[in-house]
Image (cartoon, rainbow, N blue to C red; front, side):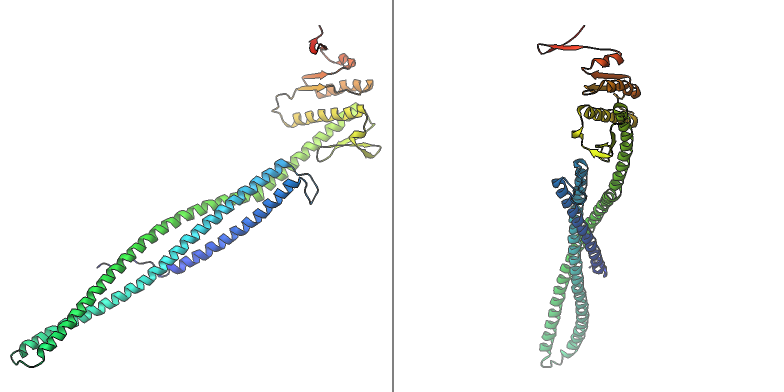
Length: 369
C-alpha cells in the first residue's frame, strides 16, 4: 500500500504563533473600537447639548454631524475588523485542532506500521519454522514418534492466529490511511479559506489605515484650512463693513466684525448693543453689513452670476438728508452694473438713472405712467 503525505511536524507550533499574533491584533482593534465609541458618545452628548462644556461655544451642527458620521463609519469598520479577526481565529483554532488530531493519528499510524512490520517478520519466521518442521515431520513420519501430530497442530494454529492478526492490522492501517486522506483534504480547504480571509483582512487593514489618515490628518487639516479661510474672509468682510459704515454714519460710531461674523458696535470707547441704537443707526449697520457681505463674496468668488447686480428694499429707513446724500457715494464705490432700490424716499430719484413709480389701488399694484 502507498504511504500518504502528512502535515509538517512544526505545523501546530506555527499555527499557535499565528493565533497568538492574530489575538494581539484583535485586542488592538478592540481598544481602538473602545476609543472611537467613547469619542462618538462624547460628540453625541455635545450635539444634544448644543454648547461645548469646555469652551462654552455653540456647536456647529453641520461640522459636528460630519464628525459624527466619520466616527460612526470608523466604528463600523472597526466592528467589521473585529468580526473578521474572530472568524480567522476560529478557523485557525479549528485547523490547530485538526493538525494535533492528525499528529495523533500519525502516531497511531506509525504504531500500526511498526506492529505490522513485527507481525510480518514473525510470520516469515513462523513460515520458516513451519517449513523446517515439515521437513523434520517428513523425516520422522517413518518413525511414527508419539506426540508429533499434536505438535504440528499447535504450530499450524499459531500460524493461523498470526495471519488473522496481520489481516486485522492491515484493515486498521487502511482505515487510518483513509482518515489521514480526509484530514489532508480538509486542511487544504481550510488553507484556501485562510488565504481568502487574509486577503480580506489586508483589504480591511488598508481601508482602516485610510480612515485613520482621514480622521487624524485630513479632517484636522481641513479644519485648519477652514479656520484660515474664514479668518481671511472675516478680515475682508470687516474692512468693507467699517468702510461702508464710516461713509454712511461718519465718525459717530465705530463698528467691527468679530470672529463669529457678528457686528460689534462701540460708542465713546464702550460697546453697545444693536437694540440700543436709533432707527437710522440700525439701518446703517444693516446696510453696511449687507454691502460688505456682497463685496466680500464678489471679491473672493468669481463664479457668481449675479455679482454685478444688487437689489435693496427700503435701505434708507430712518436716514437723514445728509445720509441719503452719502448713499450716492456708496453706490458709486460699489461699481456694479445694475442696482435696484425699492424706496419711498423721493431724494433717491436725484441720483438714479431710471425711476419706476408704483401705486396700489384696491389691492392691485399699478405702474404710474
